[in-house]
Amino acid sequence: MRRIVVTIEGGLITSVMSDSDGIEVLLVDYDTDDAPENELFTCPDGDKARMYAETPELLPDRVDEFFKCHSENEAA
Image (cartoon, rainbow, N blue to C red; front, side, top):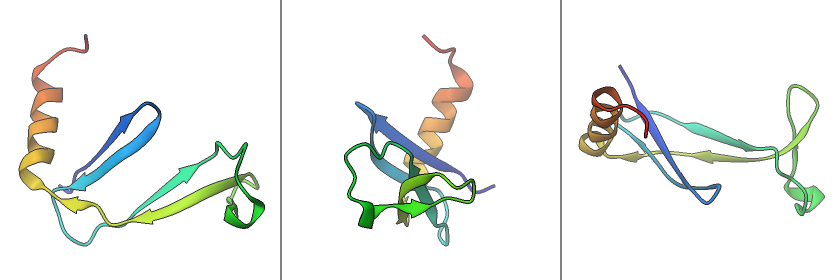
């Protein structure tokens, strides 16, 4: 199974990682308050958003660590 981990700090995406090659991630940001119009895309639902296509870092061991942490622990 292909897995992706997205880390967020202070509301900002700080990393996108995967355990497999050949994955593309599209980040869609609906927070467009201060965005210039030329940076906005029209989404399928008609809303405007910033969009960023990313190729995740290939870090299978780190992705596995995150998933193990999630499955072995309860949320604080």
